[in-house]
Amino acid sequence: MTLTKLTAQNFKKEVLESKTPVIIDFFADWCGPCRMMAPVFEKLSTQYEGKLKFCKLNTDESQEIASSFEIQGIPALVVVSNGKDIGRIVGFVPEAVLKSKIDEII
Image (cartoon, rainbow, N blue to C red; front, side, top):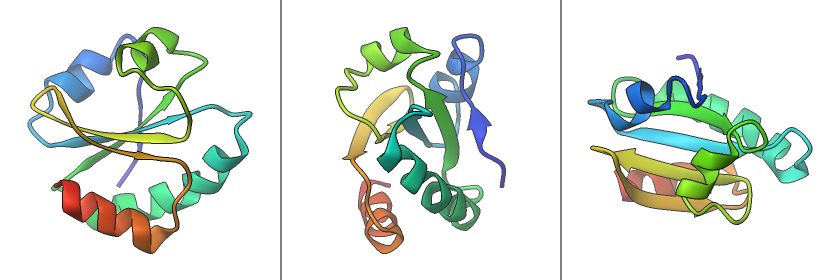
């Protein structure tokens, strides 16, 4: 499964209008914990094919979207279903913990 890069141009279509729940990785290139989370997020994306869409949003490039979700610390993973925030995971977490938290949310 590929990760979708979110921008102001595709956010509405990819997230708000998605029929499948979406998990958004709010990150920045300069963020150490974000770089640690990236391979874990990417690996898990293959395990949820058809159940959860994995997307990444660079907070430096899309500050207005990060603000609308009230992102105060990164990495922050936000699960959106039917256009609504249904769960959050903030900070770096190991793969097993992330999988467990995703399963709780969806």
